[in-house]
Every structure is written in structure tokens, then in C-alpha cells.
Image 1: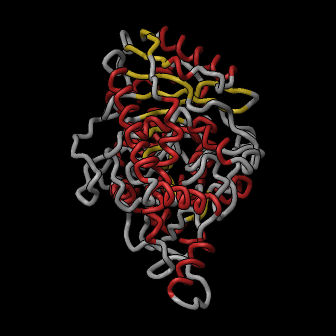
Image 2: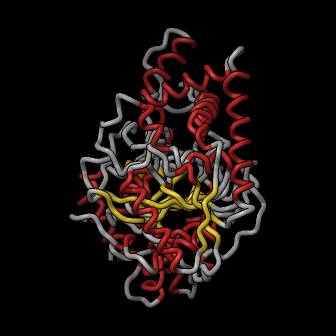
Image 3: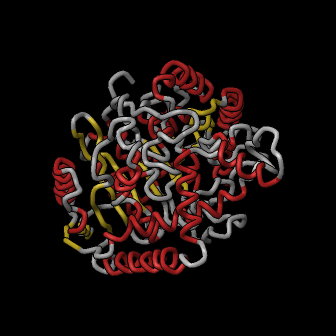
Length: 483
């Protein structure tokens, strides 16, 4: 059962081959057996899962149907879940139980999805390796000595190891697409505003977006269908109709114009990954796509702009964690200032403190114009580059990451080296565009992903291209040894 995709589970439940309760028990036992190797979960919710599974079986017995009805999933541990620890991978929120469900959690629960638990993540979603979690690093099931990517590394590792068919993640600078690439999954960052951020603990409010991680584009379409939609509780949510993503999967790629930016194939890209990207381009050409070289001239400025904007927003968002209302509080504070300083100093990890300091500096008097304002101007130039490119092509294709997964601890002493791993993914967040990573091969036994970007609200186009590619390749079917 653990090898089934979401789509296969939906068919199996509809045909009464097994019940949601049976499937849930199998997967919970598998998590208990295998997750100690991976550390992909922070909290398991066995009682809730079995209650939801029984309810889903009862709904099916009463004639209800639906692709997510009875399907097991997990949530990245920054989606608030009522009465369940929502830690954000941080000591600061280790004792926090959310008093309500995030919109994404509520929508998927209403669709009948079964929540198996909350997955491990980089602290407050700050990281590219899932090594900054208060609960310890997550291991990559393809090689337990390597990172799974971050910050949604727990969700990615759990799905890649077949502990469950799909999970939610969030993407602020590539945190769905990058771990998807490094663990051989399909991961989708929707258009900014497509999925509600209400109840999703913020890192950088103008960049964060929730999305699905699964093994196939077909499964991502199913999960996104349950997540997407307007939410009046979220002021950044966009009131745009949600199409039937599954219905567009089988469209022809004949005549599809694919742009390949020349800036993607620079000295920083592993040549073995470049070769796999070119192989995927040839595969799409066989399916009728037309390839065109394009340029994104301001891409070189993306990393410095992102690492000013994101920390600036983080320093503002994380100021609410003061040891007063909820979360970690230091022992025996002398006064209010001591309470603030020690609660934050003891509650936040090194990477979070680093980004708060960078952000506070960029926003400080005398430096705002030089750093934050200039970064926002670069952000506009990057968006303009994409708008010009999409006048010529339908989607943009390139590598998801410049390198395969690195060894645990290899970049801990040089945070900038880890930041550079986001070079291909962060532009989509700065521009608010939808992006998808899909499996494209292996380098030294480690997975490699190819990234697709599309115009606003064209998630269906990305899923269509990825699905057609997956019908003609088998990379996404490969399973890590031992899982």
C-alpha cells in the first residue's frame, strides 16, 4: 500500500480494495518503523488520523466521493493545527498548541484528507538543508549522509521514503522545489496569493506560499485542488477562480514554446546536471514543444536582493515572539528588557538570529534606502524580465538546483554557500510566479530536478507539462534503497 500514489489511493478507496482506516494503520506503522532513520516528523497524530480515516470511510459508505476523501497526508509544521503542537521547527514554539486550523489545514480536512502528523523543517523556514531545526537535521532517504533540502525537507523526505503519498510544504525562496529536486519528487509553488497564508506562520510575508509535495504531477494537481482558493481571512489572497487542475493534465504539448535562459548555464552549474537538463529538453521536444533561448539579465542580482528582502520581513514578523503572550519564556527574568532579550536569545537558533540581525540592519535608519529600497527596485526589474520573456514563450525551463544534495554539515560554516543553492528558485518568489520542480535523473545516485516556471495563475500549464513528461520518463518512479 505504501507505494500507491494519491491518484491510485483514490481509485483503490472508490473500488473498495481497502479502507482509509486500513491504509492509515499501515502508514502509521511504517512511520514508526522507518522515520527514526530520517527524522522527518516532529509530531505524529495517530488518534486524529484514525478518527479522520473512520469518518472518511463513513462518508464513502454514504455515497460521497472525492480524490482526497480518506487520503493520508502530513502538514509542514508551520501550518496551525488546532490543539496540536505547531512548532515551526523552533524551541521558541516547542510548547505552542495552535487554537485554530490554518485555512489550508481546514480545507484539506473538509475534503476528507487524513492528517498523519506534522513534518520537520528548518527553523521558521529559514534554511536550504533542513539542518537548522530545533528537533535535529532531516536525512535524505537517497543517502542518509546527505541533506534532503529545505526548508520543507521533512515533508520531502517522508514522501520520498514512501511514508505517505503527499504532504504540504511552503516556498519562500525555493523551499518546496529545492527539496523536491533533491529527493526525486514533484513540488509546486503556486502563484503568490493562490493558496491562503492564513494560519501559516510567516517567515517573509511577500514571498511565502504554500503548495504540494508528491511523487507525480497528477498527485500535485489533486492536492493543489484541495488547497487553492480565495480566503477572506488573508489580505494577500487573490479572488481568482480555481480551475480543475486534473482536467488539464492530458493536453498536448504540440507547439508549446519553452524558453531556456542562457543565464542558467553558467560556471556555477554542475555540468552533469546541465546534461540532464538538456536531456529533459530533448524529451519535451519529442512531445512537440518548441525550444527558444531567452535572457533574464537581472537574474545575477536575485540572491543579494532576496537576502535583503526576506530577512527584513522576517525581522518584522518574528518581533511578535517576545516571551510574553505565547511560546518560549526564559527563566526568572529580571525585568521586561531581560525577558525580551533572553527569551529571544534562548528561543531562536543561530540561523534565525542571523537573519533577524541582517533584516533589522537593512531596515534601520540610514540604511533603508541603500539596502531594502534598492532590493525592492531590483525585484521589480526581475519581474519585468519575466514579463518580457513570457511575451515570447509559454513556460521557462532550467535546473532547480546548481548541485545535487550535499553532505550533512558540509555548508554549516559557510552560510553564503548554502544561500547560493537557491540561485534558480528565488526569482519565482521575488516575482510571485508559479514554479514546479520534477525529477530529471541522477548524479552519483542522488536525484536532480528540472524547474518549470509559468505566467501568473498558470499552475495547470506547469502540471500539464510535468505530467506529459512523466508519462514518457520513469525518473519519478524510482524508489530509494531500503524504503
